[in-house]
Image (cartoon, rainbow, N blue to C red):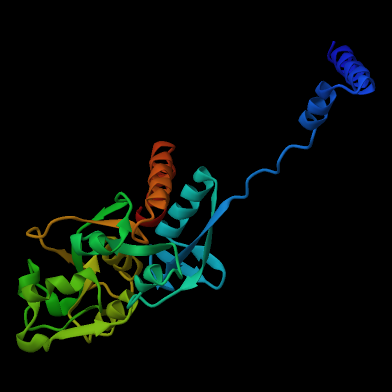
Length: 266
């Protein structure tokens, strides 16, 4: 039946063409090739080299909870992501202002101050402030108990807002580092009693190094509120925020989010 219908249409087209009518011209136009499929839009993602377990990079190979989450979002939203851009944490948000990146990922904590400077997605991870501590911090029940002891933390991170809780006069006991991993190494080497940051990171390292350093433990402070990780986008780019938020909802709904969470914390 389909072949008969096609032959009938072809015959009508030939007859109309022979008659030289305008209808034949319209038929010819309708038969023109379809427009090519729309190309996937690409967005540039900038991160630090490492912020385990959120960002793990080895050459062109990428991993870690946040980068794998972004990849899953991209698949569901029919966009592509370019992870080639690397930057130190210090000044990383400037890449948005300078149009060098579209998304900043990797332990970006929401704050009102940051929200005034850039767009932020809905939260994708809740955490609490925590310290990875060694035997020098034994007996501490809160961050204030670390006052006077050496405490390491990443420069220009949200953790710096906590310094009044445990900082000595002139902040002489604060060791500022370029990365979270460098702050952790100060504790492993015994140069600091604790490293301050996210519970997502501190619990991960406590588990990884429990055999080599059995004295390690994670200290939290119940007086502090929970915080949230987001993805940062250039101010005014609400369309990209919408795309990422929609994709995040999809990966939560289909179980991908839970699978990634279990991969890194269970």
